[in-house]
Length: 119
Image 1 (cartoon, rainbow, N blue to C red):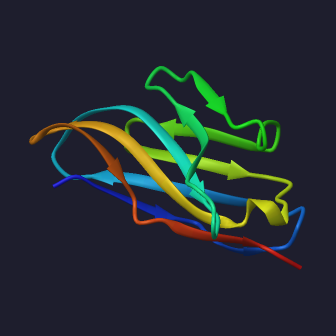
Image 2: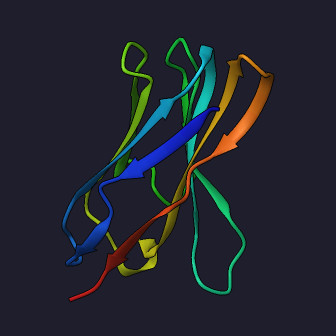
């Protein structure tokens, strides 16, 4: 059974930094795209950043220049380094990945981790 487990959320002051991690586990043959999404109260879930296996990335305009997505394929882990955090970055952050596993190809979500930016 494939699982994505996030860590690294928490409370941080405006201007601060956090690093989120998401590790994939289970019977996995390969992982294609990995990404981070977020959902603030009363809003739709939105893409934050996305990274392909070979490294190409894309970011939401609201986080460009402040957030960096990276991945360690050997560890099956994707990271999101968040700098210069703003109150509007407050949301539940979800990891997402396209994974080829024993049960076939599927799109998977983590359980989410809360990020709160407040003074």
